[in-house]
Image (cartoon, rainbow, N blue to C red; front, side):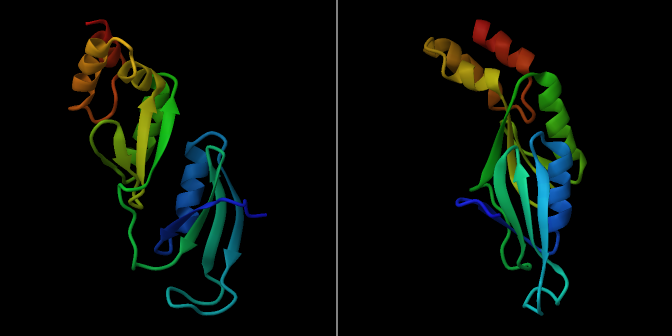
Length: 159
């Protein structure tokens, strides 16, 4: 059963591969259904995987194998809050190490071009610190980072 509000992500024939990767990488994620095309369509043939219903950390999604016309962009990303450096490292390394690429400030892209923000909770708390000087030190420390280093963030917050 499709949720009332579901994120639809466009893929070029790789929706099932992506959904399976997300299901094995992120907690509370699973592939729920694979729907095959009942007939030929512009991006595929009858019997090809057309739609994959899945969840990513509890968020309902549909992967649509719509063809090469549209690509993912940084205008949409999943922000994943992590509890510690081990979880941050595991998720970052899973995405980047599976054909993805690093970006700035805790952002990375998976091999399908979907953007992810792997964001330790401590970073968001530190940027919102009522001590604006501490928040600025944290912000300045974060800006050149790729994967977020929690120890560096905590040291910057302390000054």
